[in-house]
Every structure is written in C-alpha cells, then in structure tokens.
Image: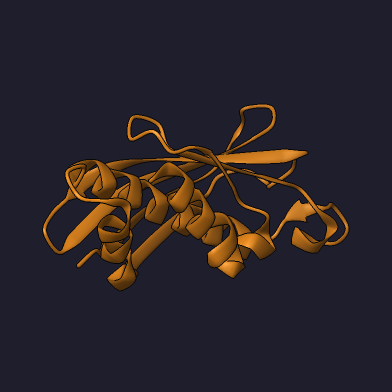
Length: 146
C-alpha cells in the first residue's frame, strides 16, 4: 500500500508533481511531505518568497495524504486495490490557512494530524515549516472521504 500511495500522491496527482511534493513519511503517526524551493514557486519576485497558493495547496495535499494513510490503516484487512478505490471520492470541502511567516527557505516540510476520521467526513490540522524549522503556516481542513 505504501508504494501505491506514494505513486498516487507523487505521480498520478499531477498537480502535486508540478509542486514537487514528495512523500517523506507515510506512517500514520507522522505523515510528512517535502518540496524544494524553485523559481517557479516564487510569489514575491523581489524577496523570493514562496507563493501563498503553493503554501495553501501543499497544506491541502498534506491533509489529504494524512487521511489516505489513516483510511489505509483503518481498512488494513483490505487489499491495496480496495483501499486505493476508497480514495476515488475524496475531496476538500473546507480549508483554512494561517500564514505566519514569509515562505523563505531552501526546502519545506509539511505534516498533519487527523482530528476526526468519521464515516463520511475527515478533518485534519496541518503545519508547514522551512528548512530551519520555522513555522511558515498552519491549516485546518475537512474532506469528504466516502
């Protein structure tokens, strides 16, 4: 399941590929993704800061990945194809982002925790830090999961 999940997240969701998102950990206790700063991701051309939309999209993707990992763990008795099929109906229904510091750094790491995993809705809280460990943004989101 881990390999199928990484393939889905990093290659089949092409927007994640555009952002350069890579799964660093798919453990339910601490799911994480990472991406490198690139010129294409700059939002403030004078200061070389990360675009706010990149921050928002990364936190949204991180929340989705955390839920996928949790759903995989919840349905560990199913085979990989059955679990992967469960992700077909997932979608963001609410997203809040708090931008705390300018997005400056060589790379960034996002993490998330599940606040609720219900039968139809899942909720997460996410964090984005830079390569120095400074907290850049936090987010909270709700997703349709079935």
